[in-house]
Image 1: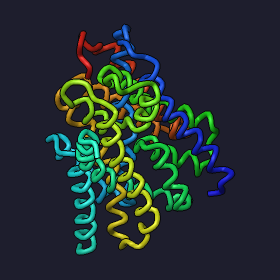
Image 2 (image 1 turned 180 degrees about the vertical axis):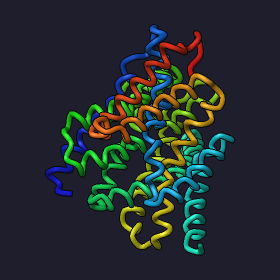
Image 3 (image 1 turned 30 degrees about the vertical axis):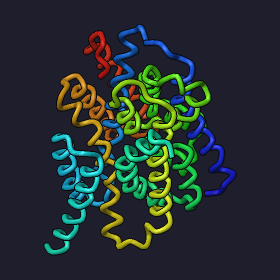
Amino acid sequence: MKWSVFLPYLAVTAGVTYLIRMLPMTIFRKEIKSRFVRSFLAYIPYAVLGAMTFPDVLYSTGDMRTAICGAAVAVLLAWRGRSLLTVALAACCAVALAQGALLLM
Amino acid sequence: MNSAFRKGIRHGLPIALGYLSVSFAFGMKAVGDGLTVMQAVLISMTNLTSAGQIAALPLMTGGAALTEMALTQLTINLRYALMSLSLSRKLDHTMGTLQRMIFSFANTDEIFAVASSQPGKVGKHYLYGLMLTPWFGWSLGTLLGAAAGTLLPAFVRTALGIAIYGMFLAIILPPARKHSSVRAVVAMAVALSLCFRYIPGLNRVSSGFAIIICAVSAAAAGAALFPLKDGESE
């Protein structure tokens, strides 16, 4: 990608992300009063990640059959509370195994 | 070397290992989408956020408006504002304004989780150690994935594509299992996301705005239907 196109995007993504993290920690040092706002902010991460994961995970390997295998393994292990690393690597292994199985069929 | 700093480095190590595999996948994807190796690494060094960076790629390559990029990052990364607010009260007297401005850059989900779980207040030496190893792991993984991803056999490259979603699932599912409210919010967000992908007309909305609409609606509905009880943080 051309640097003249890339650099403004980089500045915006890095700048916005940094300000979101920096301003609350630097300026606000007391509790949020509104229960609705606190609840909204608490639910945001789960809503964002849920919307980013589905249906995109099904297209992440280029073959929906292998992606479903990987996603199923990830859901099972994540549900049982396994670590980020374990879940991510197990999903990759499941996809690799599924690809192998499809080749043999 | 200061012992609190060393302790921070040690606590950051498992986070860095986790980041390595996920950022490897990000680096590979970025180069595959048309960015140079150095551009991919620069994004990781300056952003340090998995979901935001993944969402930024199609917006960059698709020529999205800068305002759409800013709004997308704002929504996806809004959770960090809450984490920064929450962690703010846990910082000791060594964390002045300058130190807060430096450490907040690295307030990711995982670093926040580890820092919050420490007993008592935390200071600058520990936090600088805790931010250093994950930042290094995230940048190094991106470099390796961007530079060497194409050297890997095709089946390994394909398999790594799912790594980042595995990490997302590992973040959302344990609390979803524990709290029916989180389950409901995730279910609403996923249902809306499916609508924006498959319903004709709605699927013309760009990916960045679709995520904003899905997340804000689901979280607002969750906040209205299941407000947190006093003192509850999650």
